[in-house]
Length: 349
Image (cartoon, rainbow, N blue to C red):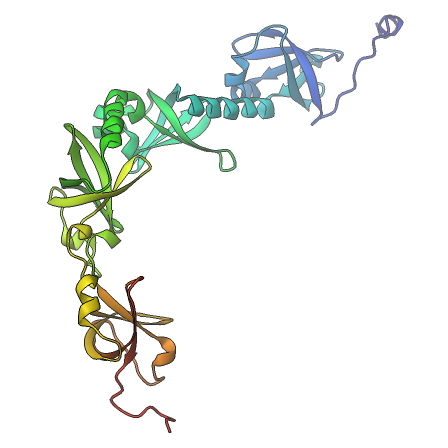
């Protein structure tokens, strides 16, 4: 046989593990991909390697050219065993990216349900559907979906971390979300609403307002709750509370809202009330590495810088202190303060 092959100018390839080869699809069965790789025998993609590249293999047909990696140069029966993992992974990630870009839907198998959402498998890649992206009945009973397939849209991809985040809500509630997007587009900065507290976080409160009979959610950040330093949101509100808010912006299809901007800015009066070099009384709100913050009244706060504090003087949050106003920065709404000394500092001459 070797003499016959030599007479027709054909020299079988000597293959080694890890080598990349180009093959032509000869046959595809439910568990095997057969490739002509120009060697003494055909190359096979079987068992785990077949499963790992199943999504890619489904797109192939006889005659297609593919790149594969040799795992076993000569297995039982003389066949060469191959892997399509790299080619298959590239195909999968490219497909996921294209689906995300086009907003197309994909099937995901639900593997597990947690407090944060569902862990799923999408085209063989591990993914996650956050609770906030579960719609309708699924949001009420996520554990009931374990082992089943759900239709999703990919909303985030990170190849480096091999991370895929998807939304089931974008599919099951697409019509409502479209109406919500239209309602959001009609809302203008400065528009006022009476809304309902939907969720409370340590960084602020989520408020649901209604526009054209469609509920839209927005965030009142902690810094927009009150002019002064406010307590934790959980101490101020409970879910279901009614609050008056004003729109101050939009970000990531959500409204940025404010409560404090519906109230008069205390700085307007503070500029008239306080004078440079005057002595006033305030309360320590925070002690930091670079100084002490002192609140003169809600929404009016100043800073005693570290270099102005005698080494032996210690401050505590909540302490009432007397200070002198050194500077008033009207533009940035800041006060520069000094402590009123009640004794001569050590080393003072």
